[in-house]
Image (cartoon, rainbow over all chains, first blue to last red; front, side):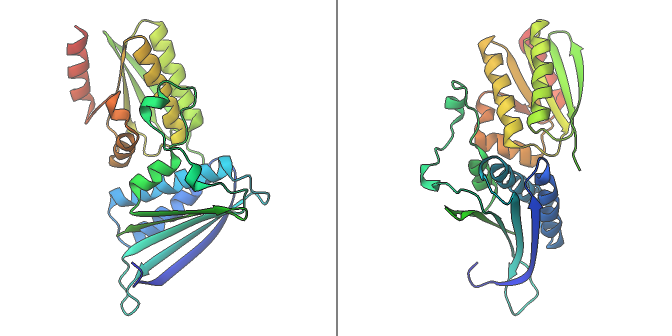
Length: 147
Length: 119
C-alpha cells in the first residue's frame, strides 16, 4: 500500500454528539461505494467507522467536542485506479495508552457486570489494517481496507 | 438522522420471535431487553431475534444483547438470531456471540429447530 498515492481526499468535522456516528458512517460508505467496493465491504467500513466514532464520543473527553474524519482514496499515482480506502478518525481528547487496552472475551463478559470494550476488536476484525496513535494531544485511529 | 428502532413481538407456542427494524444502539438494545425480559416473565424460554430489518448495530447495543444472553443462560433458556446482514453476522462471530446464541440464516430454519428442541 505504501507505493500508492492519494488520489482523492475528503475532510469532514463533526460535533461529538449522539448519532453523529451515523453521519460519519454515511460519508465513509459513500466514498467506499464510489470506488466500487462490494456491498459487504462497504457495510464493514460503515460498521468500523461507527465503532471508532462511538469510542471517541464515549472516551475522548475532547474539550473542543469535535471529531475529524479523513477519507483518502489510495491507488497507483500514474493511473486513476482506486485500490484502498484509508480512513482516519481523529480527536483532540485526553488520549489513552493502547498497550493497556484489555482484549475483551465473551466468556469474561458473561460473568462480569462490564460487557463493553469491544470497539477496537470489532474495527480490527472488519478492516484490513488498523493503527491507533494516542497521547496527550488526542487519538487517531487510522484504518484501511482494500477495494 | 436518527434511525429509531421499532419492535414487533410474535408469541408462538414455546417460542417468541422479536422482529427488529432499525438501528440497534444503546436505546434500541434497551428496548429489545425490555421486550425479552417481559417474555421471560411470561414463561418463554426460547427467544428468536429476527434482525431482518436491522442494517446497523453498534457495540453498545450488542453489549445489551450479551446481557440478554446471560439472562437466558441463567434460566436455562435459549436466545437465537436469524436474518443477520453479513456484516452483523461477521461482527457477532468476531465477538464470539455465536458460541452462546445460535445464528440461523432465516426464520424458517430457526423456528424449525427451536420448536423441535422445545418439545
